[in-house]
Amino acid sequence: MISIFDIFKIGIGPSSSHTVGPMKAAAAFAAGLDAQTARIAIDIYGSLALTGYGHGTFDALMLGLEGSLPHDIPLAGIPERLGRIRTQHILRLNGQEIRFIPDRDLNIRGNQVLPKHPNGLRFTAYASDGTVLKEQVYYSVGGGFVVTEEDFEWQSETEKAVPYPYNSCAGLLARCRLNRLDISEVVLANEAALAGCGEAEIRRRVAGVAEIMEECIKRGLNAGGELPGGLNVRRRAPQLAAKLKVLRETEIVNTRLWPMVYAMAVNEENAAGGRVVTAPTNGAAGIIPAVLHYFRKFNPHATQERVENFLLTAGAIGILYKTNASISGADVGCQGEVGVACSMAAGAYAEVIGGTPKQVENAAEMAMEHHLGLTCDPVGGLVQIPCIERNGIAAEKALKLGTLALLEDGTDKKVSLDEVIRTMLQTGRDMKATYKETSLAGLAATLRKKAVPVSVRVVEC
Image (cartoon, rainbow, N blue to C red; front, side, top):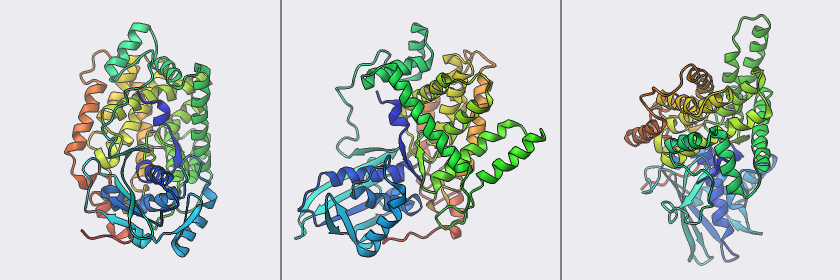
């Protein structure tokens, strides 16, 4: 069983699958190289190749080769390091300097897809005489998760035992029913067993994730200017928040508009390459923080324990999607990112406002049911249009569905969460590849003239 801390990872924008994952893959590959290495080449396939410039993939790969990881990379030093690599062609690899020429060593193969996932990377290390020292294929499978080709289908046989194991929502609800527990209580006990610590320590870690989400919202509400990438997209969250404050004082506006602005603040930070929490991905990183912040700010019954329960419940729902379907836009479209995040947020909100496990399932199911078929068509390969507004709309939808779920007992639903998860996966499999994070269709095609051209060499194959 994976942990909720695998779902909620601290990273950098703009993409968990196209920035965080490639950086982790590059760092893992570089860690196994020795002083014989004179050159490294990377073949970049499928969605990573087609949207890599706008998603920061190529920059992430170079920083990863220098040993950086998304959760703690010093953001202020990134421009200087990338400038050195691009202009001086010097890559610092495990204490030595080697020559790295991006136009030569980053091979963009957008018309090829490796067999196991659209987000494929092939790393090759060479000696000075051209001998291949090491070669490894990695897949970035969404949410910052990275696997090697050999481990793609591998399941651990040494997983730690947990008190309440489950691999489906039906199994999770059965555990809750038999033990008279809420979903958050089941997850808390399991996380303590996985980490080998007490429940108080798990709550401390969850609270830390919540605070990073809060900090991201605050930064986004106070940062102005244009987002990078060439589309000249202006940050809107600060101005929208200021207008909402004025309208609230005159009692003209409903507070339910705030989650949209909170989500946009997070996703504008993400688009700018800032520090965010994958929830469950960077492209959908604004929804869960926005709904949680709304709960903290506007619900009179909000407590620190309920804040933590929110993330515990959301994490449980995210694990179901990650385990039984996909959270990769390149694999199943945006239904696997924004749709999953909305489902997680709706279910979590239902629990903290008093919902039963069955009502939590109801909220989560409705949220995904009405995101089925959602495409991933980022304009210019950037996580800006339509991603930022889409997060805001999904946050507002999650609140409504979480509230709606409590008006019914959830026992008469015709579609279960397990069924809608299976449907989402099949819908993603049936979706044309051009609508799955390639920037070749949808809004990306409509606004293609505004797209930023890829700045590195495209290999024709």
